Amino acid sequence: MNIAQYQDKLLQQATQAGLTEAEVYYEHKTSFQCTLYEGELDSYETSKDGGLSLRGVYNGKMGYAYTEKVDDDSISFLIDYVKANAEILDEHEDISIFEGSQEYAQHSFYNEELEAVSIPEKIELLRAIEEKIRAYDPRIVTLDYCILQSYSTERTLANSKNLALSHKENGLVLYLSTVVKEGDELKSGSYIKTTRDFHALDVDAIAKNVAEEALANLGEQSIPSSKYPIILRQDAAASLLSTFMTIFSADKAQKNQSLLKGKVGQQVAAETLTLLNVPYHPEALSGSNFDGEGVATKQQAIIANGTLQTLLHNRKTAKKDDCETTGHAQRESYKDSLSIAPQNFYIAPGQNTQDTLIASLSEGVLITHLSGLHSGTNSISGDFSVAARGFHIQDGKIASPVKQMTIAGNFFTLLKDIEAISSDLYFLPNGHGSPSLVVKELAVTVE
Image (cartoon, rainbow, N blue to C red; front, top):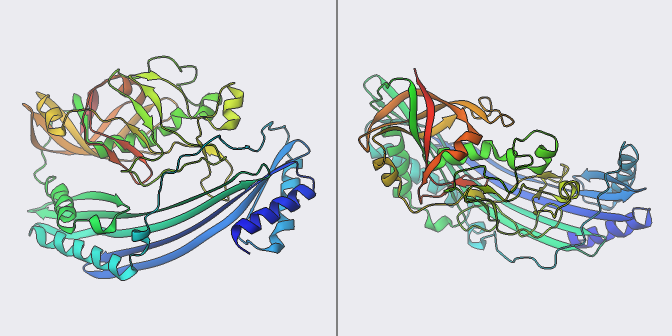
């Protein structure tokens, strides 16, 4: 029995057992990861994970159950557990199973050629990259991590209202970090590369990027602690946006956990900033043609020229706010209940190059890396104080790397203080992205 037949059988028996509406969600993931150290294979792991969940309305309440065992014995367990789960709810959730959107985009998130690449080929690629990095410069000591990860995911969603959807995606991610030494100074630099096109990976270009990222951090200098104009390099900006993503959730706003509550239609950022959700962006690995409830996803502006257009909604939050869902229901896995998250969420790029942004500052700091983002940020107030690496800018040029810094500010204020945006859009593996940004000022404390 294939998964489609199993879903049909489960839905039929759920209806016969008294569930007035029902939905079956299936997920199957395979992944491979290997790590090299000093030219040798340090770790090697393949994994498979998957399962199925059933949501259903019983006596006017929504119940939920999941299992890793997709077989006939699980059908009665799932139905009985959904009933029991619905019975213990204190309140009526007042939400139904979705009947389906009028049409769905047909974007592809899966590359057959990537799936055909063998494990030995992936290991050999990683070995070639590591070898090139180590040979790039005598100041390179080692790689503190050299990891390749590939994955493939299949999802299907079917319900008692004759909706049947499927999604397939795959991707490959490289995580690389190089350690360099000059005299007594020891520095590192990290690099992440994502792709669905294995054969387009350029070993020489990747090795150069990783090595130069670390070597550039040698020769650090101190600067006075003060407030400086800041350039957030695209990867640092994307990391900060990802950390504060939850402020755009309607669920958080309804729980008074976002200061964007009640701000739709108001200016919340600089006019230069447009924040987009594009579920099918070609440079990102994530995305889907439908969300966790089966609602069709679409391109939309969350912020347009500084004005908040909408928060991110699933059907439950949209009902509370008397509006339409934006198609942002999310399932972290078949085990999890519905939450809210965007798909390929990024700041729209501008026309400037990063060099142009640097040249525009008589003095400032270019931030290239942020750490401690979860412990040093408060998504409700927007305040952050996090460790950073970067470079001092003087007279429109990079002067020197700066000793360990802490930068501090407020994310809501930062959005309003963006003065220029570059064209160098970059996506993290989770689909959050940004180009480089010029921020009016942030507090910089140097050790």
